[in-house]
Amino acid sequence: MPRFLDSAKGQWRVFALFWCLVAGVVTLSAGEFARREARTEALGQSATATALHAAVLRSELERHRSLPLVLAQDPDLQALLAAPSPTGVDRLNRKLEGLARETRAAVIYALDARGRALTASNWNQPASFVGSDYRFRPYYSEAMRDGQASLFALGTVSGRPGLYLARRVDGADGRPLGVVVAKLEFDALETEWRASGEPTYVTDSDGVVLITTVPEWRFHTTRDLPEDRRRRLEVDQTARRADLSPLPFEALSPGLIRLSRHVPADVYARTVAPVPDIGWRLHLLSPAGAGITRAVAAARVLALLSVALLAGLTGILLRRRQRARARAAEDEAARLVLEQTVDARTAELRAANSRLNLEIDERQRLEKSRQDLQDELIQANKLATLGQIAAGVAHEINQPLAAIRTHADTASVYLDRQDAAAAGRSLERINALTERVGTITDELRAFSRKTRSGAVAVGVDAAIDGALLLVSPRLREQGITLKRSRAPDGLEVLAERNRLEQVVLNLLQNAIEALDGVADPTIAISVSVRAGKVTLRVSDNGPGVAPEVRDRLFTPFTTDKPDGLGLGLVISRDIVAGFGGELLHAAPRSGEGAVFSIVLARAV
Image (cartoon, rainbow, N blue to C red; front, side, top):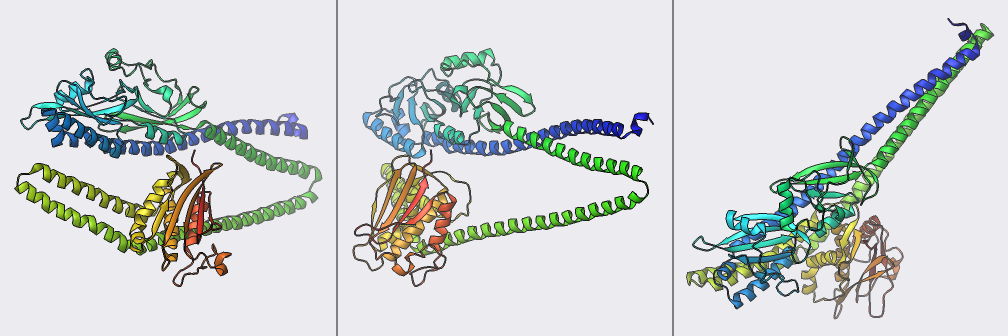
């Protein structure tokens, strides 16, 4: 044994050197392990978000893909393309205008066999397509040749990017009459994705960026383009405002890239999901740099603390050994006592830690039970409300069903008389009535669904419309006058659609019950915006809240109704509080009874 190890100083030097090396190795290893784990977790979260974004995109495409196919079978369109007339053009213009508004298509238009636009949904706008020649567009020639075509390009008139879905229109003799085209723009989808804070873009089979939350990336590429593809883009005028250069990505490791332009400088986890049938690929970038840095720093700190603890314990043992050698036999007993003391304290700490873990588990279980109970109460309130309005909604559905039966019989008679135009009008009325029934049943199904999600941007008028759709039969049955002032266009609040609708429906139900027996019953709904807050006010001209329950209005089981449980307002207040808002009993104005206000943050 080297002589310097016989001295206490020599032993402490070796001890310090050894633990410095151990600390360095453990810190580096822990940091690298944490980096890999954080990267894997970031990629997993990004893959989940990518799948959701891809599902939304596929849904949007499927919703519009059938539009040209259905229009190609439209007898009015076939008749117009076969024999153009001013009357037919005017009728098709208005028909396409209404269809574009209902389906949220950017524009729908029809081209004759020479590629000239005869009719369009934007016929009455300054940038109308009517009369324009689109023979140069590939979707026209491909649809005339193959029966259908699609193309993502910039509009020659609007300059806005979109997906053109084209379908050939054939006559009764099989002769091509022209092409019907629907343009789909993705501004709303890009806005929705942009709100998530994760850069997202969609590329075609050649890697050209088509849809993106970062406008500067549009028509850039993920790789160098073949020369024939570049020439085609130039012919299509698709790239007239882009240089088709590759995106400024710097690959760091599998799945991770670095960006420094157009988005916050960070390390991003990139995942890709295919969009079948159209050959697109959806790419999503999740910020991962800060998370990886935090994970690495935490792992290194934990490793250093662990090494320091082990080094401290080892130092204690070394010191005790030195003291034992110096103090001889009598100190051996003291060392044993000290070891027993340390073991006892360690056991106490372990027991205390176990008790603490049990308490934590119990608190988490209780919190989950409380949350589950609250969700069940909310769902029970929904189902109870649906039970109250079921009869009225059933009557609301039976009327259009009876009308559908009548129109179907009428259409059959017209067909027997070979009156196709009259039969078509009956079928159009059947279609409108079917849409009405579908709207009511869709609202019932959406309302009854058990949902729970974070607060997102929700249209105020959409939530009010959904609630009114369910209670409108009761309003008509009791002869209640509804005074409603609509919200400003596009006004949105931070909430969850179904639960906000549930709160509005509860307030309307309470108002309807309070107006039983009141002369000239009236319910008023108004929306106001002030200082970033949106206030939805529901009032009636009933007797108002009884004084004896006014101070305890939001206390469970407090009610002034003979058959009430006193839980509806409590549940509604908890729902609104979950959105970060307030449900208040406001002071009534002259001529008003009960007044309730829902105050929510405005969505930016």
